Image (cartoon, rainbow, N blue to C red; front, side, top):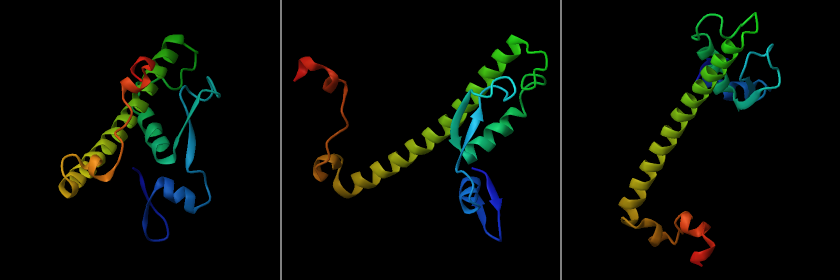
Length: 134
């Protein structure tokens, strides 16, 4: 998360963008914009800023690629995918941690089979996708 200061308090970049009337999501160019302006992935503004910062750590010449070297383009695509995967990994790990905390709280309050106590169906499994197990 990127923090920015605006009129005193600190905000995450995405919240600050909303406060200033800007987009909360931005288009991240997978390849250099000048190489392919259409290859974009829509990401939260915070994540976009982090991904752009990560590009600065790429080996020299990969992002700019002034001669259009196809191997530099391929390396840029791989590095971009790795950067996006890194951000997704961080978010998924935070989400999993939160879910584990919620599960512990529910188990403490309602017992180890809390979902049965609350009348919540478990998520669908592979057997639900098999028409022969009806």
